Image (tube, rainbow, N blue to C red; front, side, top):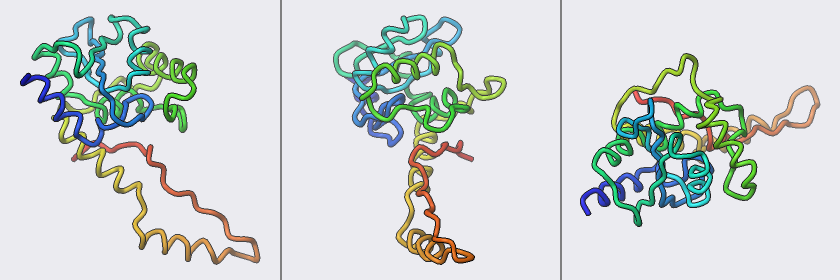
Length: 191
């Protein structure tokens, strides 16, 4: 019961409120990605039910899947979730992902499966030299994710200033649209 409460607390953190792989809200599953064949020092993420099935297809040597509610948890597994979480794991596994590589939702399961396989099995998006984000607590990484999400949301003042700037145009050309910042902007590590 105590371990499940710790998992529920982690799920309330902003970065863990959406699936690490597709962004679906309210994940209730988790994956521990083993490091050097061991789950004790694995990298824990929260995922949706669709992504949990795709992770199971990777095999337990790449992704050990558990239900937050239905499965029993060991203290070491919960520690993995606390040490990592979605924000920190995505800083690592998506460091060099091309723009728009990450599927938005579970609508195209084949694209999602390719993405998950590229992300965890082939490790195509890792940072140069495989540098890990520093081993800070999940809360610090979640705070960084929240700050990045807040920065990606334009304030009314910023939107009004952007609208004035772009409505002028130049040299008789029609004004160009300025794209809004992406909610999927890369998350900066906390200082």
